[in-house]
Image (cartoon, rainbow, N blue to C red; front, side, top):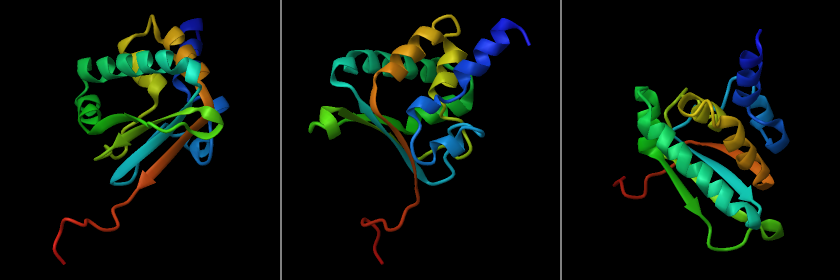
Length: 151
């Protein structure tokens, strides 16, 4: 394995430093949703929101410019929200809302960034991971009830 292959493997693996809940179990198969919809809750340090939002903008560019139809499909259902209220320990909560989630598609941020920006990914992922103030929570959601439907 050459140096570039090692770097790619390290960058494309989800960071266990920001792992919470089931994320560590997900690390072996990537960030994959198996449900109808999903959320990724991101608790960000208030002084790092500009870095986080810059990486989110690059992520959007990566998804939209990809030649991979799965990445384009992921972009269609992926929305990013920022909470108005402060989070725990004065963090800023960002929610990645994936509806519909592309089942079995890999949502690993570092992998998506690497595909589009291989020369920038190391810096982008460093800014991304250093922005976390409380980790990341990965949630698979199954539809229980659609209140708009009759019956």
